[in-house]
Amino acid sequence: MTDPWTDEAPPRAGLLRVVLVDDHRLFRAGVRSEIGERVDVVGEAGDVDEAIAVIHHARPDVVLLDVHLPGGGGRAVLDGCTGDLPDVRFLALSVSDAADDVIGVVRGGARGYVTKAISADDLVDAVRRVADGDAVFSPRLAGFVLDAFSTGTVADDADDALDSLSPREREVMRLIARGYTYREVAKDLVLSVKTVETHVSAVLRKLQLSNRHELAKWAAARHLV
Image (tube, rainbow, N blue to C red):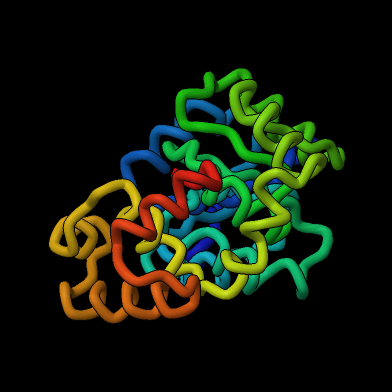
């Protein structure tokens, strides 16, 4: 029987086993094409539920994880896997370099965060280092991570508030704080406008803010956008 999630080819001895999680099929195909000779891509997924199932099934060495996914985002994948699969390492691979995205996945258990501007050689090196237990970050993000988690300038005053938000609410918060309209958020996250309005109301209530303008100021003051 054909396995719907993992490769039919037998395991390739000596190569790290990797799962690709990204909602863009063409991007996954590009990553596979660029690094597939140097790692063993044993599965792919395009949304949160599929990713959790694939990762539990394949039990790879490293998961390349996009931050923004249908069904709740990369943090939801981490929440669904790290407790059950402590030996699986996660490396975020995202177009976003927003502070709240980095904080969310690192606090969720990711061992690193690199942007999609990374070269194939550097990505393979990052996968190997994460598999070995190192923490790997794109150069521009490394200083931010040190500031956020060592000095606490972001973590101390934002962690509790961010933790009160669900993964989807954090996604909505980030886009609203960047000035997106409800309709634009709905299109970007594949939601109805009414659902976006519900999420915004929940975010404002949890953060004890009155409107989206206060939300934008709150997020900017904490370097979350």
